[in-house]
Length: 74
Image 1 (cartoon, rainbow, N blue to C red):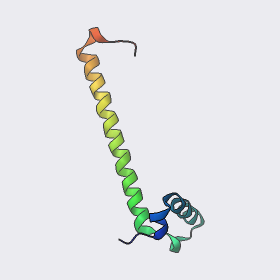
Image 2: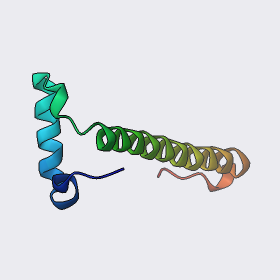
Image 3: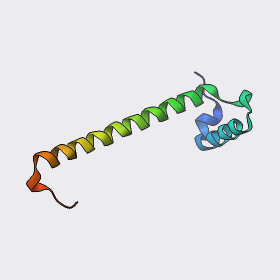
């Protein structure tokens, strides 16, 4: 995959331009490969974050259940 110069040099500006093109329906100007990669990466990050938060929640619930005398208000 060949990255566009703007994608490599000014990621924020690249995102602003891609959003503008999407909203205006300028499909031929989209950087499809990099957009697909960024969307996939965002999805993976969100899934990983959710899994981590669920693991922490489960650990707290197990401690709550197994150590009732140590329960606090926090």
